Picture 1 (cartoon, rainbow, N blue to C red):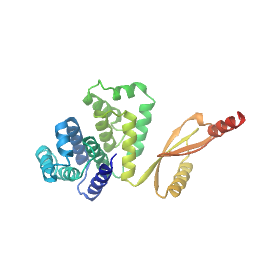
Picture 2: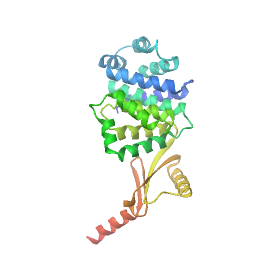
Picture 3: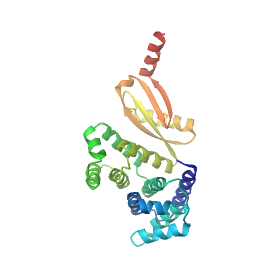
Picture 4: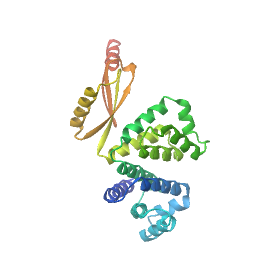
Length: 263
């Protein structure tokens, strides 16, 4: 990500934070805008053209989306194209990220991170499902319909919207990569870090509470905990937050011991 995009994304996120009337309809329209811009090299090029006056880029947004999208959505898109992006692809990524953040804002009490994580685990455990959702040959609307059927009544409307929208337009990303990215975006929007903890047996509620508190203290902020059960760790636990790994598992200690014995 170029420095221009980093600054532009921060400005777009601030605009969303300051916006009013952000609901799931706004998030849905932002996803639709990301698809429209991403599918048209002419449109994405016009909106990401830093050489063009910002007023011209805003006029394009109004001409393309003004008659069908809500005022709140058009306003956010206008603020996005006001910024300077390193590439047209970065612009599309930003609109998509803004859509995920908008869904998080609209459903502030829903456990979107947890629901995204659990669906990602479901996909990982079902190779046929991962193939069906990730195949480039499949019809995008059929993939979205499949996700809607799988998630109906099991997750919040915000999570269903995020997953179906991302699956319909993967942009050369694998399904689990998309879900993990969306989970990180939601956690960032909510001011939290995502911790994945792997244990041999499920954590009790008390253990999960203590671990969350300890991690929050260590990292100086709220932490969202995702739990994975893997008998391969034997005992203890392994925790990953972004690139940080805390491996206190028995399997890791045994591996270390074997290495030392081997010389």
